[in-house]
Image (tube, rainbow, N blue to C red; front, side, top):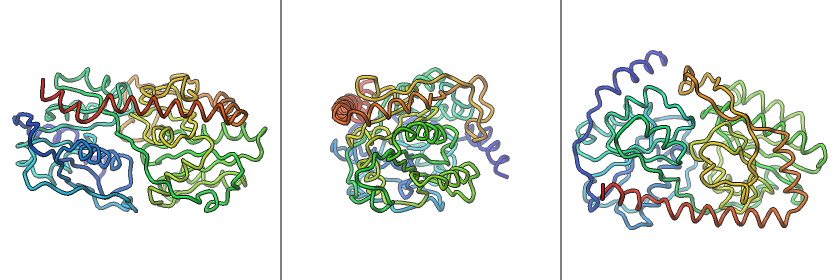
Length: 389
């Protein structure tokens, strides 16, 4: 049934949604629609958008189109006051496969009366055909990275503007090492991934392998992996959990945690590792950088906008064909992504552990660079660009 719905959605629903003829108005409130009640990354991007607009003194209304899923969790977020005036512009923080159901909840009439901007996060150089069809009814698209923007822009004449997630330092709960049984003086490596976003793309197995090689010479090191997903339902995540049980120095946490606890894990780590095969932006990488934690990251895709050898440890990679059963990636012809070199990542971890002062200085440069980059690419500037078009 899911397969039939996907086909119906892609070939029928994406073709019947009307395109608004409304003009962009900078003086009216902006409505942001998204999965505000959920803990997923796509929900966090919507919350970050609202916070950024509020800080810029732009009146913003919230449209929560969250489905009733078990992924809803402990969201620590304060919604800003809602303006009384109706919005004339809408930013929908959902990718095309999620749009038909969300637009039905918004209402086709309301959707057709606003200038509609899609905030689309994509991780490959080739976009699916369904995404191309969805471009038909958008007035503009914001993308979190130049990598994603290039992939989308080649298929449309509407404005496609880079607006990175406006990440800011967030409260980090103390005591995360003690909570998960990790000594305070241990060298702690952390990584965060969602199995639902394609565990193959997040590539936690490569982090396992890099840690195995690194811990051979650093037996006091620990690896803490925060996963989103159900190990009982996801075969690969379940296999990772079983593999972790074979080592006293590896922890995998699949429980829902408050965002302050996740932030605490990152902030209390000596290194954050993301050996992703591809990222549209790399939200957890950016969060780690802002927390001052040294970052080891695959040197390809969206993270390349703010990671370079002067401020982060960019892991070598080779491009390989995309082979994945995830509905969004399956069947994409000629698509490639990066296969990170775990041996190189282990060497980089040894460099961080061998000279903590130099690593801290490099992490400081990364934070300065990211803050400047985010200041240069804001929602306010992107909206001003639309107003002057």
